[in-house]
Image 1 (cartoon, rainbow, N blue to C red):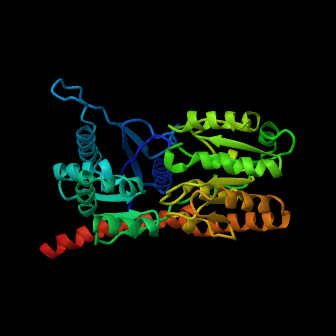
Image 2 (tube, rainbow, N blue to C red):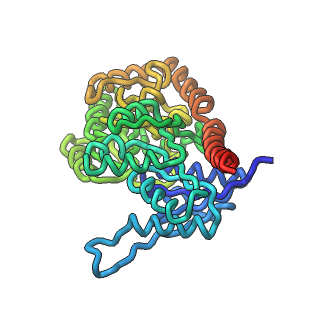
Length: 385
């Protein structure tokens, strides 16, 4: 019988792909009988409700007069160490090198060598923060002092090595989709609300940061809507939201664009879409493309970062150069105007999501990594004895 582990997970609990993956991973690990302890400053947004074998430990900052700002990083490291001692954690799995891997390094120093740290790189800590020389040494410290490091795409592994001169092993563990949650659904009730005249539905899901190029989404939609009556559905919120709303209004598209805001559960809504738009300037993986694929929805996006590892051009969607909204719109029109092509691509999406990015497959990879670092520790102890 496989050993049951005590696993701590730290992630950014707010809207974002890394938090989604970390939370879903924790839920699946708990289903397998492992005890999972989330250590974050707030409840992860996909974790709501009671889950057997899952526990939440809130990180509270110290409001001490000598500190100009509450030292969250130190509070997190202290909380990690406390939970590790109290719950006898085997593994501390942190998502993002900054600050989480560095905090885990500090916590491990407080607890001792028995605590093993696994760090998963999701992208921003490498693609943005690593460009800052003052941060790159910290990121390198967190990565090199982890017992195992994983990354969500080959492209991210390449960039990590190039930017930070990292030579250690990095395990490729793609993001995953739970096939019990993400699958094509009857979405007639939503389609009547979103597209009352039978229009085609284009969708974009993100945190509305500049890197998502949400303005390109609007431009693609404008071009498509000129040829085929369509609706655009936005899900999420973020710093580009107000600017996007203004752009939509200025283009006279307000009546054809819906802003649904932040939605904790998107699986059912994804099946409403005919096409997912992902024109990002950079994506280390592109989780929303995978979730859409699992629901039979092709993605039209940018040929950048890890997106080509998820979306197979011409089979499960179409990819163009960043910013080429005309080509994106042309591909969308081609897809929406050919029912046979669309049906073939939709089936290919479902097949690829279930076979190449299935939760069972990726879960086994993570479990294997956990047991590998624990067994390596045992082997080192035996060799010393």
